[in-house]
Image (cartoon, rainbow, N blue to C red; front, side, top):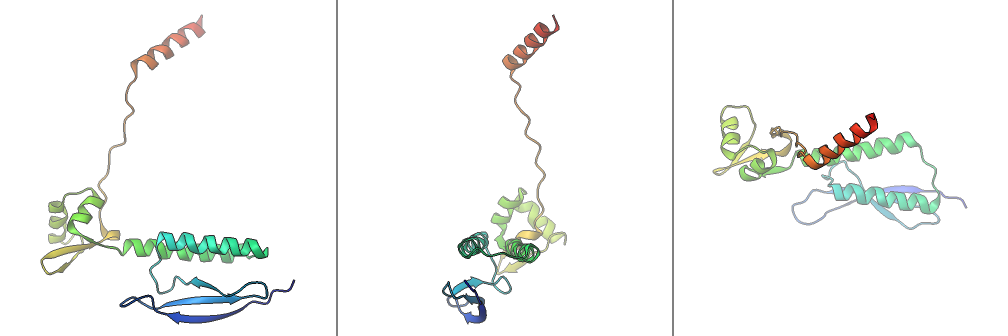
Length: 162
């Protein structure tokens, strides 16, 4: 079975006000056209990332494709970077930023006023980039002390010593 793929690029819009997305169409002698979103211009979500690579997995498995591992890794990493970039660029209101960072809204407002945290205003409201937010350190969770388990451990150690 000979497979001779050819590629072309389509441009389409996904609703009003949304950016254009280039899609790669691949057609082989055994498969019909498949639309695969490219991560160049469209902010990719986690769901898009998983859907894209599950689709490729099923297509490649169906045709028994042998691929160059380095090129596949490059594509996966590029898509993953697009996902993290889209998440870091997410716009959060002051209350959302406070919930995500663990700091109070007053503290975030103070950091912005001191010039330590970038933000911008829409009217009277402050908005922050998710990637710019500080993260409040959390104390490690201490395991609760179980005196019964400790007593059993001590008794078993004493029995082993005899």
